[in-house]
Image 1 (cartoon, rainbow, N blue to C red):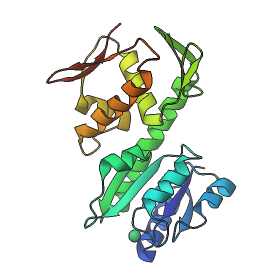
Image 2 (spheres, protein in one colour; image 1 turned 135 degrees about the vertical axis):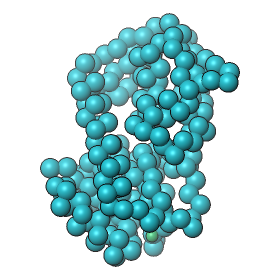
Image 3 (cartoon, rainbow, N blue to C red; image 1 turned 90 degrees about the vertical axis):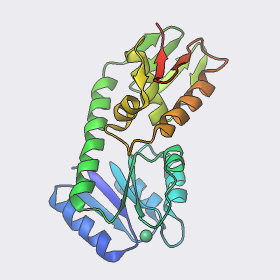
Length: 225
Ligand code: CA
């Protein structure tokens, strides 16, 4: 049974989501604040976290940072409409998706299922093991990229985007296609998030690998064979 932690200070929302997700067959842990969440993750394990941004005490973004320091567990951010949620910051901190309140439990469930589908796909890819490409070796099981004696440290999204471009070498993709490939569906169509990921991947490859991500002007990006 997959486990989901919901961190939400609004009691009615928290309990509604708890009942709904339990009914859908998930093991649900509810938290009214960020306090103690890290310990709960350690004790109970977690397959996914639904994380409200505005919380008493530690806010959702800070909590995300702390979670990411230890875990790769997918995180769905939740924020009130009135709060200007910085998507780029959310992605940089390692969020996988976000929803603006009010949303229906069904909508949340759809996002959760999309993430679990992707996790399952990644696991089936992971079984296939090492993939060499030019001077890189991509270890899907460990989610590591090696170049000679170096191990390059990629976040989950950076890893997925690089692997996607390498799997489709010589082919150019639009930002929208890349958003869909990496986030699983249209992530509220913000192309800046792709530019940001590309920038960070380039920085990590720069001076280490000969592999270049080419900008296709007016279109998107490509890696050549
Ligand atoms: Ca809140």
